[in-house]
Length: 484
Image (tube, rainbow, N blue to C red; front, side):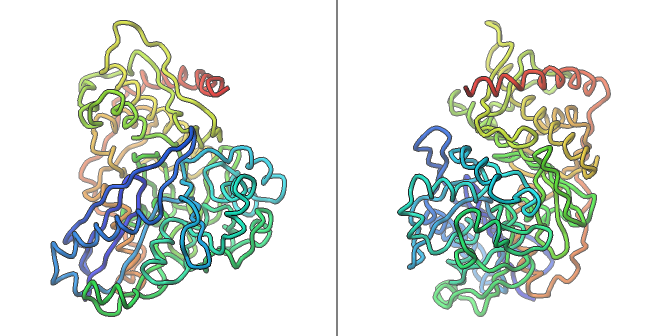
């Protein structure tokens, strides 16, 4: 029946999993990645580090189950979105990739908005994290780099280039460039031209569940496999949705990862730019989704852990499991600016209400609360657009903290369903896309398994958090003033 490899290129690392025809995970591999921050607000990675990490993760899988790996039939790749990977005529990176959480292109956003109907065609506000303003920044500050740029790829598409030797992207990932006509699922000449580009500089498009090519002969020989299909793949959030079974309109998930995402599948293109909601194509044909996005979810706790010299897990254990209300201080989690609902790349974080008697446990509690309040803003934005379900799956590394999920439920009013495979979501989704691309998993209407547990805040805890949420929202202006 064949085996299927899913590769997830994240910001902090690469995960690879091998599944059989029944989607049972047989082996996993992992490799860490580092983010380079040469200036405040900048965030970059070396594309060659992605390939090295993919090699490491895949080799761990091969070594764990060599016989099963030899039956590899298809590969799917998911990846961090929006990164600008600029290649020369020899397919070599011309500079480090500018990542999704890089805010340097804030000035270019308004200029692009004035040039073309990015909101109407692209379905989204021009935000500094998207790909198009990054290219406008390069045009202004590194014109020699832009002049030498032959191809612009997203991070996972650079991995697919390594796998297949071809330039291919899928609809879900391409939606985050701001060059896609999201309604019609094709590149927009108007939006490309507004950025000073042409269609020859972007990859061809396929659906995420369609074949994008075949594994290069050199890699196939080295890995000891035969003819292997490579699927179109997906952006990380659409891939997570595939892994969780969030495929039908009205289904959703909340991802508590480096960034935070509240995702809802839709059956049509539903832009909501007034609330800074993202409207993208899903990874499957004739499907779309909306997302509320916060830029510093677990990254807020990671930031505090670095200062405190402790692990994020150790910090999270400091928060009392018995507390039925919010922390005494309020944290604004805008360490990298914010998207939904503020669209403010220069927004800054802050603690408000700290006192001399507060210690690290109270500060950790405030950080968890602040992220949960930001999710509440996303939930309200999606509700106003009519797309937010009240029961959502959870995914991401932060979902290991039951206490954090309880706080998020209290702030958002969402019932959070814990799956058995939440941490494998994007990699598992990539493996499912690989299987769909071969026709060996024909039913794309599969729903997720029953949840391991459902978390719903008790009414008194929710009442207390709702009162503090009002204070949080009044203080959000502090984040804007702090950036001045």
